[in-house]
Amino acid sequence: MPAPEREMSVALARSAGRRVLWFLFVSSLIVFMIGPIVWLGLRAFSGLWLYPQLLPKQWTVNGWRQVFNDPNLSHSMKLSFEFAPVVTVASAVICLPAAYAFSRYKFPGRRFLLISLFAVNAFPKIGLYISMAGVFYSLNLISTFLGVVIVQLIGTIVFMTWIPAAAFSAIPRSLEEAARDVGAGPLRVFFRVTFPLAAPAIFVAMILSFLASFDEAQGTFLVGVPKYITMPTEMYTLVLNYPEQVAAVFALLLAVPSVLLMALVRKHVMGGKLAEGFQIR
Amino acid sequence: MVLPPVAVIAVFIGFPIVAAIAYTLGRAGGPNSVVASLGQRQFIVQHGVTLDAYRDILGNKTIHRDLWATVWVTVLATLVVVVVSWAIALYLRFSNTRLARIVSGLSVVPLFIPVVIASYAMLVFYSSDGFMRSVAYHLGWHSFPTLGYTLWCVFLAEVWVNIPFGVLMMSSGLNGVPDNLIEAARDSGAGMPRVVRSILLPMTIIPTVIVGTFTAIYVLGSFTVPYLTGPTAPNLLGPSMTNFFSAFNQPQQAEVLAIVVFVLALGIGAVYVWANVRTGKRSAVAP
Image 1 (cartoon, rainbow over the protein chains, first blue to last red):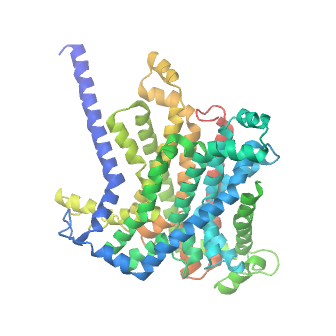
Image 2: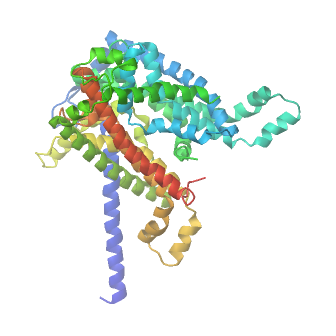
């Protein structure tokens, strides 16, 4: 074979080899990423499923009936939907003014405070919750509604300050100044100009906070048990003590709010809002 | 205006951590008095400090194995997350096909799924009657290992949970590298490996370090994933400190473990801050 042709066939073989590798990579990625979720979905409807069959032998909705008839499980659903909105609103009230201040005013210690807010995320969560729980005994916060709200609130502070702060910073000051020039007071400027422009980012922050609270299990488990068992904490018991199918159904139900709400804010999260927040400025 | 969140953090994070340090050193007064009156097997001093609680727990053979398990799973999961996120983000940076969009969609699936469910799904998927073993059986591999309730399952689940953050971070970093830089390098004859090594990698050190440090800290501080998918022992320190706190009623030992994990995380966090300070200006995604 003349040299150039040999080179070409080598190149072809190489690109074919690369294709096979890519095919393997992508297909194992598909199995790895969504396989477990699909498999769990099938479990929720299976009546009889013996190893090593790839599909259930009988289908049923019994698991669903059991979940909705179990008073413990429906109670934990109710609790989850009570905690998440309370935590989200509390977080917004506490953090949004700070987000505005961080983006609009230069004050001494600003950088230090920003970093220390951020440092919350740099603590290993379970260690943090253990330390908090130790002190919560003395503060009478163990097994109280307020205690659980505080634990869940901690996980939302970063979202609620960083994302809105970036949005406030992105609003040109000249817009606010123009409104001032035509006679609007500072409050009017804020509510007619600044707030509407930042509203989408605030909405994203609120959704992420809602989900952070709704899905929080570790801290709630330590501080809320036995009185306040939310849906994700209930999963710990379910996995160990209930039929597999019931756990699967409950897991799917628990995923519904996350899937719906994340789908709403998907564009913002994927667009780099989250990624940008991780740089220290 | 910035006072409320700072106060929340000072009171509910800073203060408990200081109290925890005091408690692990043998001081049971003030905020620790109630927890100390409930706990067992405590090492308390009235004056000065004592390291007995640290000696007690760090001399524990089970804890040694937990500590090693934690370190190994953390290192391995972090490495895999960094490499896979890099590979996916790199592919997405240079490809705009339908396949690329599928890969991009797949890699953020875990964002939509609460960790509790992810852990449970992973457990069922790799269990003795799970998908992997069933498929392997049909392919003729009858002795495919059961990964559920092993550290391998913990490792796989930690990777699964951390992939979206890694891919989003790396994509944002790689998209920040200007096209003309890459084209210029290619025009002068650089192949893809060379472009990655000489241009992309140096310009995305910060996002790479962020992915590494945050994944490592996440794994160190995780409870749900190892608790649901891992073995009884040795498991990661998250479940074992929770056991000491609740099941064994030894809060002092639990808090010692928490401090140990903090110290490990502090080392990792130092890398993050160092990278930010050192290459702040050169990074592609820096402001």
